[in-house]
Amino acid sequence: MTSPVTQRLALYFRLVRLDKPIGILLLLWPTLAALWLASGGVPDWTLLCIFTLGTVLMRSAGCAINDYADRDIDRHVKRTAQRPLTTGLIRSWEALLVALVLALVSFALILPLNALTKQLSIAAVLIAGSYPYFKRFFAIPQAYLGIAFGFGIPMAYAAVLGTVPPEAWVLLIGNVFWAVAYDTEYAMVDRDDDLKIGIRTSAITFGRYDVAAVMFCYAVSLLLFLAVGWQHGLRGWFVGGVAVAAGCAVYHYTLIRDRQRDGCFAAFRHNNWLGAALFAGLTLDYWLG
Image 1 (tube, rainbow, N blue to C red):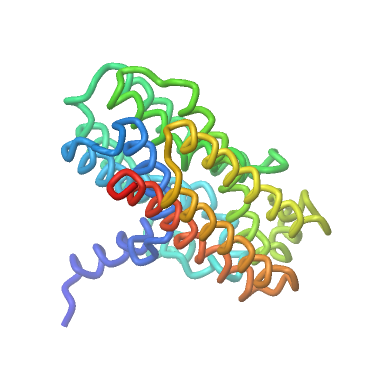
Image 2 (image 1 turned 90 degrees about the vertical axis):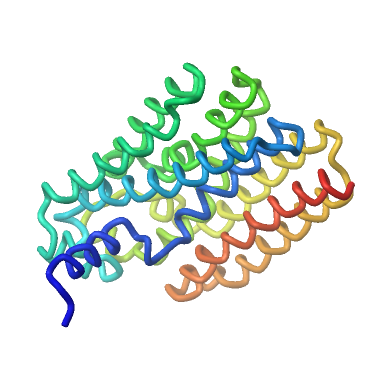
């Protein structure tokens, strides 16, 4: 028989989406890429561990905050109606406490790092914490999500170099376009529900141009990533990784062009492989190029 403590921990596990690691990976790939680029392909293993664990913790904290903000909305959306906070299995104060603890542990991880990284981490927390409320009034909240999901990029550069060069902001802009692409696919799953309850998403804002907008955002994101890598002298393996990622984007088009829920959700989940292709090409070029 499962103990009450184990049952509670299982609910917290679901609250922070550790049973659905796709969100962690979508944050991790750009952060790792930034670490590799900033360090010339030889990242410090201590930094690698700090940023990997910090990504897991902050994504988990973000999920708890998001569910708190959307606790009265999620019950009206088919995909989110059974989340533990929405169903009352977890209370609101518990979600806030979980988010606070995770954020504090994440901040403790970066205490050994320089002052600029700490300052950027505060901005990252504020952005992540405010994101859930942007969908109330911002026409394309996915762009703000891209900033939140990509803020590990300037933090990684700051941790390695002690400064944030222009290329880090170019990568962040590229991440914003990538996030708009994959989260529009995600929003296309919930579009009917979101229209009923008045939530604003890019899928609604783009309207009948949603598929074209997704493909445009993929193209801009990949071109910006290619430009930064090219500036670093990366060629064969790196360009191959970008080409594979472009192939993933084309595959996503075949999944979303009919705007069916299952296809759109499959395209969203497949972005893990797009990010993995970019990172694999980057690392292989440093090691073998």
